[in-house]
Image (cartoon, rainbow, N blue to C red; front, side, top):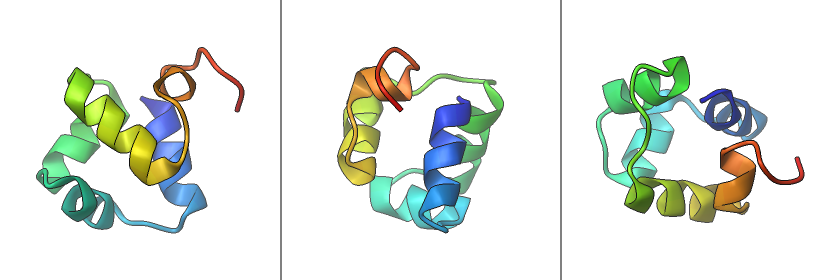
Length: 64
């Protein structure tokens, strides 16, 4: 999901930094960003919280 990568880079966070904030492995972040896997609902909510956006924005359905 490119929006995860974009929002992470906007904050100057590494994949490792985001992974620690969410309590997941860095490889999980890499897989989300590459589209190999999609975050589960609970992770989408957590991502929206750490990025200060909505789940819809993360899914490309809201304002950017």
